[in-house]
Figure 1 (cartoon, rainbow, N blue to C red):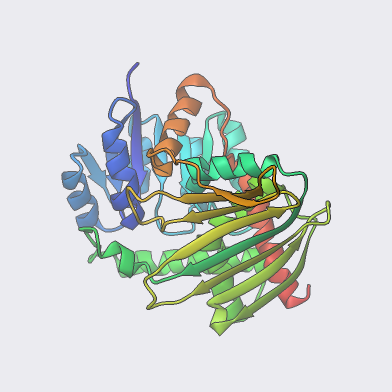
Figure 2 (spheres, one colour; figure 1 turned 90 degrees about the vertical axis):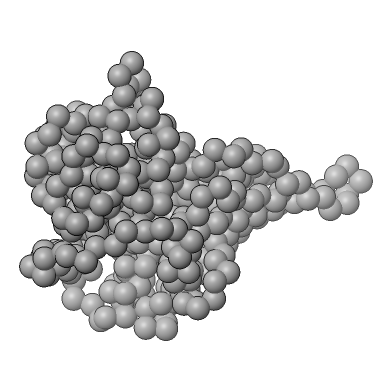
Length: 357
């Protein structure tokens, strides 16, 4: 079978650290034919680095090319290009967040349905073998009582310093302003007029904590309501309490600690008969496994901790393989755009709980 011909929009950190190296390694499945970035120099340099035959600074040129699929990992918002990509008949992989507002989500989903092509949300953590094991262990619980998300984020520059990254230095000022205005408009569409700290918190929820929230939805389903939300530290700190129909609660906190390099992101699921603790590395890492602990009692009532071995295949690679299977074998997307809309709705509800709406 011929590889899927794919184009990549956005040549920044996640493309250089994860997607392009992985697509190159999966050359039997994908052939990267073109890259696109608002920076002409960055597009050319990244194309040379990864031996991509074509590059452009205009996404319309990329969508007009003979491509089967596109991967969108450019600066948010991604809605305009996503809708246009579906209209061009492409299969579309959209890095998180797929968008900011429910109206955007509906436009993207409608475009996908009209095209009849594959739409995949870039939710790589649910493809992590450790997450899959944690989800299985949670499903076997007698009853889930409490879930805790603990996300201590740190400045990404600490992690990116380990990689040789090419950076943009020639993005036209007009293009930067256009992107900034489109992002502000999308946030207004989602929330209305809100203070700067709330806008910042919304950005962190959509851009970072969304990893925790979609994993939580995969295990717990959609919460019944947002019980409470606190925002502090000028929007760099967010805590929320989510309530579920079965009586369970989830306490979720995201905090930026700019100069603490020890990144920590955990998902803890507690039930009557066991406790599951999943710890993730930063997304800007390669070859570092997530870890999993399952705490139970043995037949004598003594506490035991099981640490399952985790498969070495990384979640970004598994995600791309799944995208390929969706395109070539008709497999249903595990992280569909329709389900991703639920996460956009939850993020908006978390903010509304803080605003008292």
